[in-house]
Image 1 (cartoon, rainbow, N blue to C red):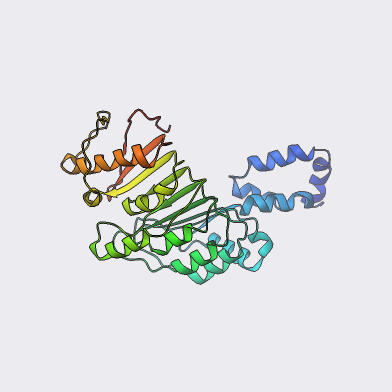
Image 2: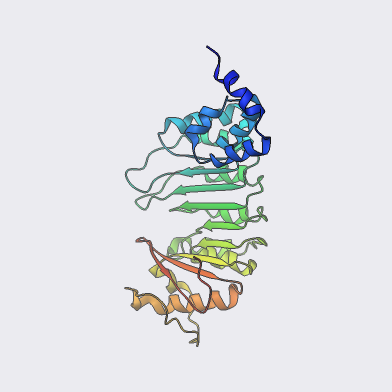
Length: 298
C-alpha cells in the first residue's frame, strides 16, 4: 500500500502554489484538519505549522494546551510562529492553578508576538500571578494588541506601556480609584507619561483613562469599565449643554450625574476623534451604549 504522501504528491504538484496557500489559509480555524494536513506534503509543512501556531491560548488543565507549551518551549522555531497568545481562565467555577514556570518559558520563546491577552477575572479573591516576570518578557516585544484583564491590577503596567509605542488596541485597569489604600500609589502612577501614538481602541477604568487618554488623542473607540462609585472620585464640572437624552434606560440614576459629567469631559476634551463609547458597569457587566452625535460602532 502506498503512503498518503505518495498518493497526494502528484495532485499537489499540479496545483498552483498560490491556490494551495489559499486553501490552507481558509482552514486556519479548523485545527483538526490542519493537524491531518501537517505531513501531507513537505512543501507545505512549514505553512501548516505557521497556521497551527499563529494564535494560541492556554488555561488550567487542558492536555492539548500543555502539549503546545511544551512544543514552543523546546522548539524556538515553532515558538517564532506564535503571533497571538492568550492566558485565559474562566470566571466561572473555582480558581485553578496555572503552571506559571512552564508558561513563562514558552512566552520567552515567542519572539514575534504582537498580541497578548491575560484574563484572570476572579472577583472573589486575589490571584497570585507573576506580573513582573510577564511584563519583563513582553517589554522586548513590539505588541499591537495588549489586554490585561485581572481583578487586582499591578501598577507596573503604566511603566510597561511606555515601552510599547506600536499598540493600537489596549485593555487595562489600573489601581482602582475607589480603593482608598491605593490612591497615593495611583497619584504616583499618574506622573508617568504614556505616549501611544497609534492607539485607536482603549478600554479601562477611571485610573487608566486618567493616565493614558491625555497622551492618546486619536483614540476612536473607548470602553469605560466602572464600578458605579468610580464617578465619585472625579471633580464636579459645570453643567454642560451636551445632551445625553439618547441614553438607554439605567437603574442607577442616583449616581449618574458625576458619571455623566466625567463622560462629557472625556468626549469633549480628551477624545476629539472618538467614534464609539461603551460603558461597562461592574460587577454586573451591564453594557450601555451612548450616542452624543457620534457614530456608534456596529
